[in-house]
Image (cartoon, rainbow, N blue to C red; front, side):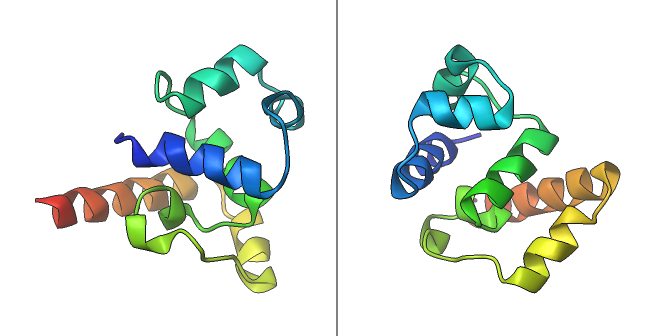
Length: 105
């Protein structure tokens, strides 16, 4: 994962006026782990990534594509995302990462 993910994670948190402590509590993770995510020292699980998308009302590609920083999920997209099973979410996120990686090449 490149440095875009951690920087977007931090930017989206600041946009919503949350502290690292508040987000870590909301996501049920330690503040140290959240800090490591924002610093790029750790990678989130697929489930945690989806939780960030839902918390910040952002589609997954906003975390991976530089040109997608200001997109928001519609209510319909949020509902659909919440009803997708973990296996399908993992597949979707993997496909997005492959697309992103291929565009960098």
